[in-house]
Image 1 (cartoon, chains in turn green, red, purple, orange):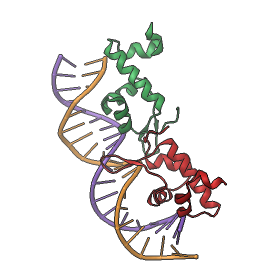
Image 2: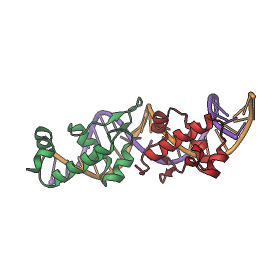
Image 3: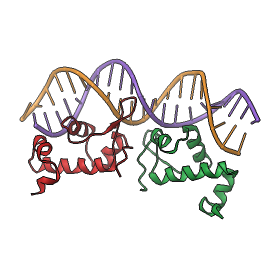
Length: 77
Length: 77
DNA sequence: CGTGTAAGGAATTCTGACACG
DNA sequence: CGTGTAAGGAATTCTGACACG
């Protein structure tokens, strides 16, 4: 599902990560949540999956720059 | 999707209804959102569909009691 | 009956910064 | 670099009630 519907609290639960980590991945241009008129971030289930992959890659030793330049999927190589 | 992930603001957008209407359908036992530890309601995409159907039935003249007793789908008869 | 609204409080999220290493 | 945290403010949601019809 591509609809951006959940706020960061739910994403935290679904990914097991902290809000800090999730916001950081956005800062590094790896995910692009939408914003409510009030500025609250909204994520999609796809975003949740991407976030999990990002964290996985980081654990594997990659840096956010790598993930952005080459693309997440491509790093499976 | 059955996961209860969105708060009422998003449900309002997806259904076009007001928070008041959505909360009322819950009060009438037609939908059962989950709650965060803090008491905030969380809905699933299925809930969103159900809410639309409820509103549809109400427009058709049914009362919430009917919808609860007979079940939403059954009223298609 | 189903829905609107004003009211006050509480939960959630936001940003910018300092910290560590 | 990736993440933790305390800080203050702002957005969002919650409940109970009065209103209309």
